[in-house]
Amino acid sequence: MLRTVEKQLVDFLPGGKYSKAPSKADLERTSFSHSTNLGCEHHFGDLDSSQKRRPNASMHHHTTVQLLKRNRKSLIHWLSDMPSNKKEEIMKKARKGGRVLREQNMNAEKEVEMEINRSMIEEKGNPQKRRKTNGLSEIANDPEEDYDCITNKLPVINEFSDNEYIAVAYQDQWYPGCVLKSSGPEAIVKFMAPCRRQGYFIWPAREDIQSVKKDFVLKRGFLPDCVNSGRQWYFKEHDEIDSLFRQYQNKFF
Image (tube, rainbow, N blue to C red; front, top):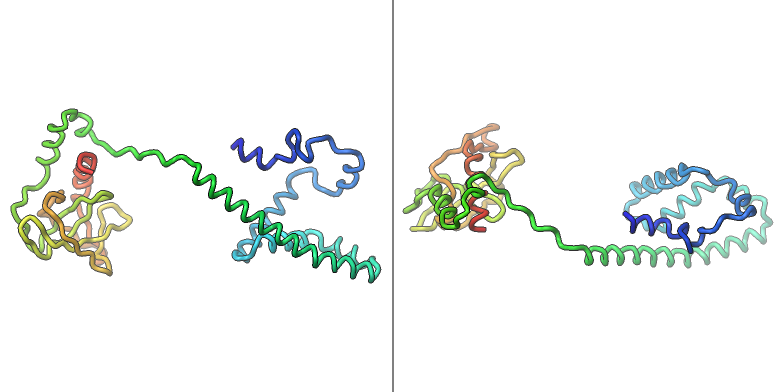
């Protein structure tokens, strides 16, 4: 936060462009400006609206539109009272200065992008996520005892049965699936995809078929309930499988 304040108020801090008390002439010259930040809030509101209407436009375009919009009446009045030769000279300078101003704005945008990239590189790495634990994993201090506690809850599989449902552990989550074909300690499994609601799964449009070893099976011998006219499937054992998966994840992944 301190870095942001220093960046935004650099011109008003000691040594900045506007750090000194303004003179009487400057106060008279800027007497038209607002004494509160309402004018600034209006500018930001107009800028936000302009960016929503034209999201691909450059900041040079948006600032130009805002300057003309806020000062159009005074600008038109100022130009209408100006002699034609003076007006032509002003327009010529404006066209020439517009190119220079656009180049300056583009360079400023590039500097902002480079600063964002530098700050992202300098940021410290994300803190390591704390793994979820339950009472069993906290109580079991002996690694061998912890290992036995988990393996005793896993199903004993000599061979898979075709068309049976199993829950398989992966690093991020457990997934249910149906055994299509078995071959000794491995099986070909057609997996389901999770829904937003916990315990609900669907068959994905693109089939997810993987080879699975018995060591990663958390549970077998259960059947899902068909819900929503066959669009979703609910596993009432999901709480039990979640608890077993957290223990399995802490120990083996």
